[in-house]
Amino acid sequence: MKQILFICLFITSLSSKAQIGGEQTFQFLNYVNSARVEGAGGYLISVRDNDPSLGIENPALLNRSMHGFLMLDYTSQFAGSNFGFTSYTKHYSNIGTFNGSLLYANYGSFSEADVEGNLTGGKFTASDLNMRLSFGRPINERFSVGANINLIGSFYEQYNSFGVSTTLGASYYNEEKDFSSGLIVKNIGYQLKSYTSNNKEALPFNAAIAIAKRLKHAPFRFSLTYHNLQRFNLLYFNEDAPIETDPLTGEIIENIAPSFVNKFVQHIVVGGELILSENFQIQAGYNHFVRNLNSSVSKAGATGLSWGIRFKVKRFHLSYGMGKRHVAGANNHITVATNIGRKIVAEDTFYRQFKD
Image (cartoon, rainbow, N blue to C red; front, side, top):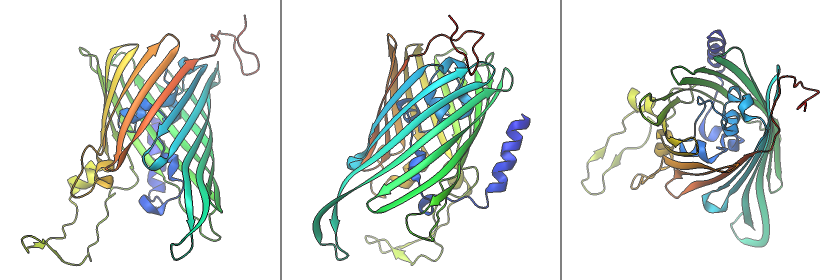
């Protein structure tokens, strides 16, 4: 508990500098790395099991049961964007669990134009890259902590940018009650080289806390996440907006500031997993901030909703997840994970592993 309180105080000290929305760079650091996480609403930082993608979300969740897992994830987004992600996890007895991962984001090819919008016939590309090393270890039977370091690169036509960031995590797990909680302080970092000179930008800082509970008499686990602890009001409100009238009735449309409840629910992500067996699960989730941010006034549709399915075939864990991230389209994840490591023995050390 002391560790969690310390991190909460650390969040508070950073909150005055934290920013959100279009004021930030390297937004791809918020990429969801697996179909399971996407299906549960985009956050799954409190569940502790052998899924290495959870240890990437919250490094404190890395544990020895993830040892030897190689994971591959492919994400198809709307507008021709594609993400590729891979990671490998290795555990060292008496030290902890390491995970190395690589994210490559490709936004496709674009047509060049002059300042007046006339096409010149040329083409250019845009992409992002993130190399990450994560580490987690237990403090005792119930508490664990972790951290990672990210080396970041963005390549947009002739404009390049580089940076470094870290995420801190903590986790609590009560096996008897099948209850867990998690806390992350995400994307603490610095833009080493900006796209243009003398224009350094903030990273997408995010502090989140979550709980998860598996029901005693039903095959269901729910999770509840509160994200962006560092800033309560995530909504944009312009108190000086011009007066508008309804085109049909002619009545004045009031410019009403968002209420406390409206501000609060923007932080909430609800997720659930139907655990039909160890080899077959179904996920569903709802992210209210995504729905509010990316749906249109006339049509919200299923924006903010997500679902997924996860099953095991022999040595392979296969997952599909879909998140309706925008009224115009969705993220579609396909994740494959398999264990290629050898069994851990008690004598394993950092220098000598897998004694036969």
